[in-house]
Length: 139
Picture 1 (cartoon, one colour):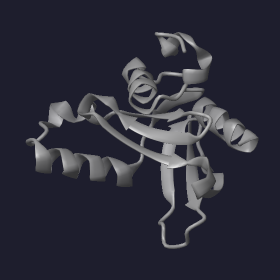
Picture 2 (picture 1 turned 180 degrees about the vertical axis):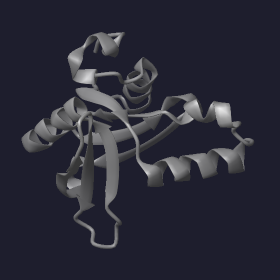
Picture 3 (picture 1 turned 120 degrees about the vertical axis):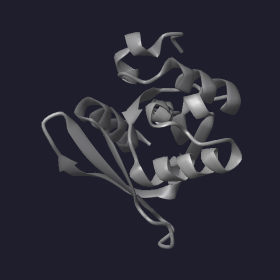
């Protein structure tokens, strides 16, 4: 894994801290990644951080910038500046589909095999969405 993933097109603009966090904490090799936003997950991370630490100032909301990082077995949603990481096994997903497409952004919907799980929608760049969908097709 390169020390500066942003120089590697497989990682787009992903924060190098995210790839390092996944590699060191989960003993996996990151294959690809990119920046991402997910309203539901970001709200969960924010609420959890505030409950366990303190209020984030409006200017400090940049601390909630997140990345998706993919390994051979899992997909990670990492918020490195608040040390938050959620992950799912690729086998948990029923489908990953592009639901919206704008000039510079795509929205991917992750549906789970377990019908009690709510779908997750992530916003990311078109190139990041294409990398993730390509990876999904090989899993």
